Length: 342
Image (tube, rainbow, N blue to C red):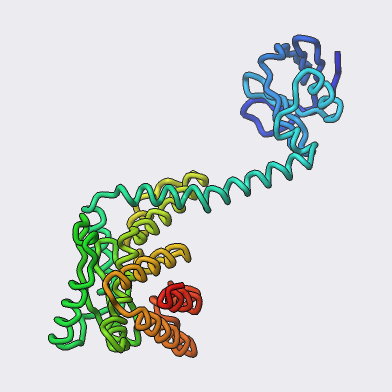
């Protein structure tokens, strides 16, 4: 038997009153204001042990008792009930540290391996109709954010169309999402990127920067490589999964629809990973060799793009084509090594 003095809060009342609690083997007796209340221990709920916060006993009618001698009640409670998992962790800091490390490791594995693999699987099975809608939505966004109709002559546009049609690999011609070229004007923009619906956007400045058709073909084939590996959709799915995972963890699922739409709208601003850039470069190099095109021209246009980016970075933000393609110097070395057959 254990007797404890403390404070009792009647159901529905904020005031606390002095009370005495007597704990027996199977029941307890509460004495408060001259009244006596008996209750079985099974009907009493005891709050979880959290740090030094005093334990609270809650009766079936909602009344609550807080003992003054919290340590004595804790000792009595622990003799009859195994401490909660959280309480055991608080008493063993090594366990807390290991749990924290395991949580961080799990998050890292999810972000670095699970999400990319899941994104690839989902993107590979997305219907062509969805890719078309996403690409069209992105194109609409571009037309309202600084991109306008090309200023190249009709003859120049036709030459680009013929070049693009000629260098498309046969395996891509049979793709469920057909490729198309769209030349657009962007003030001060050396830019090229592939939309999810197979539309290759090339800026006027990029076309005028190139010194040869082989150089332009290299840029086109690089972007076609992104389409071949479904990089735009993989990045879109990856971005969406991260947002959905965050909302799931925080319990806020009200904005799922808006999140997916916003991710689709800004697909053109997504930064491809280094591995994706290597994949696109390897695809372009292989196709340049197969089609008998000059890898020297490919290295030259990459060098020009690097110089253009360095020049613009003096007072203007880097062009999207440059900023989304890191390690240009290493990539140029890889191209030159492939040219020499290494």
